[in-house]
Length: 234
Length: 332
Image (tube, rainbow over all chains, first blue to last red):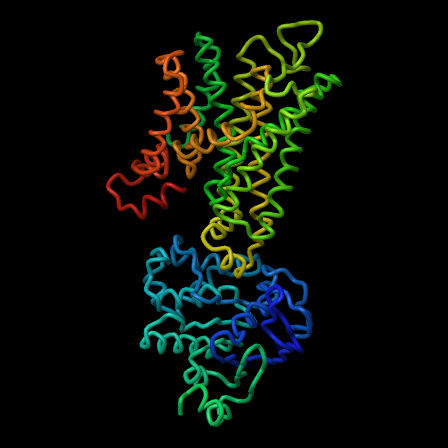
C-alpha cells in the first residue's frame, strides 16, 4: 500500500535519511526501530508530509504523494499520531476527537465514528467532558490514538506511542495498538522499545544513522544475532 | 424574551441620536462604535493567539489613500473606502503570508507586527508633500459647501455619522458571529493550541490564519476610514504607529477579547476613561491619565485575564462555578 523508494531527506545542509526504501502492505503492521537519532521520526515526518524529500518517491496505493502539503495527507488516508501525543490540551476529549474528524469526508461520519472510538476505548467515553490536558499520560495517548482513528485512515502512523510513559502504561499502550490492529487497520509504528514492538508487528526495519541496516519479519529480527547484541543486550 | 433582547438593544441604539442627547455624548458614542469595530476586528485574531501589535498599520494604509484620492482626484469616499480596505487587506497578505508560511508564531509574530505599524507611520510622515507629514491633513470641503453631502460623506450633523458607525459596528459583530459559528473557529482554536497537531488532522494552517488576518485587517481599515472621515482630519500619529496599535490591544484586553461584546466594552471603557481623566486633570499633570490607565491595565491582566465583559459573562452563566468551566463558557 505504502511504498518508499530511495527516499533521502534532511534539514538544511544536514541529511537525515539516505535512500530509504520501505514497503507496507494493506492490513500489515510494520515497525521502524532504531536508536535515538537514527532518523525514525524524520521518516514519519516525510511520510506524513511535514518534511519535503530531497530525492526518491513515495506512493500510497500507486498514487504519488510528492509535493502534497501536510494537511492533504489525511485526505489521502494517512493519519499521523505525532510524537508526544500533541493533543489540544484546552479542548475536551470529545472536542479533540471532533477535530480528528475535521476533514469533510470524516465530518459526515462523525457520530458513528465517535461511537465506534468510544466502544474501542471505553475510558474515553468516561472522560469525554474532561479537558485533554488534564488526562493522565496513558489516557492522553488513548485520546491521541482515538483522534487519529476518527478519520478512518488507510494507514495509521504512530510516532513512539510509548514515549514518556511508565512501564506499566507502555504495556497498556501496546495493548491499545493491538486492539487497533484487530480492527484491520494498517499501521506503521516507530519505536525505541524494540522488544515490545517486535511482539506487535509483522515486519520491521532497523534504522541506523539514516539508513536501513536490517529488515525482515518480526520473527527473523527477534532471532537476529546483531540486533540481540546491539539493542536488546542479549 | 431573551431572544428579543439583542434586537431591543439595537433598536434602542438606533433611536439614541433622535433623543435630545448632548452633542458631546453623541461624539463619544460615535468614537466608541468605531473603536468598537476596530477592537472587534483585532480580537478576531487576538482570541486565537495571533497577537498583533501593529493594527495601526492597517488603519493608516486604509485611510490615507481614501483621503488623498478625494483631495487630488475628487474620488468619492464610497469608492475610496473599498480601495483603502483593499490596501489594508493587501498589507495583511504581505505581512501574513510569509509569517504564517514560515511558522513565525507567538512573540516573534507580535514583533513583526510591531514593526508594521511603525513602518506605515514613518512612511506617511516621510511622504510629507503628499500627506502633510506629522502635521496631518484635512480632506477638502465639498464644493459648493452644503450641510449634507452623501457624495463626499461630509455631514455637519453628527447623527449621520452615528448611524453609519452603528451599521458598521453591527456588521463587525455579525462577522464575529459568522466566524464563531463556522468550522474556521474550531480550526483556529486547534491551531492556537498546537499547530503541528492541527495540520495532522487536516487543517490548512497557513490559509486559516491568513483568512482571519485579512478579515481583521479589513475591519480595522474600515474603522480607520470612518475615523478619518468623521474627524475630517488625518494624523499619522493617531491613525497609524505604535500608540494607536497598543490602544487597540489594551481596549480589547480590558473589555475581553473572547466575547463578542468585550472589545466594544473595552473601547467604551478606554474612551470614557481617557475623556474623564482629561477633564479632571486638564492640562495639569499631563501623562497622569496614561499612568493610571497603565496601572489599571496591569490589574486587569492579573485579576481579570478574560477582560471585564468576559468576567461578567462567565459569572452570569455560572454564578457558583468552577473556573475551568468558566473559561469555556466565556469563549462561547
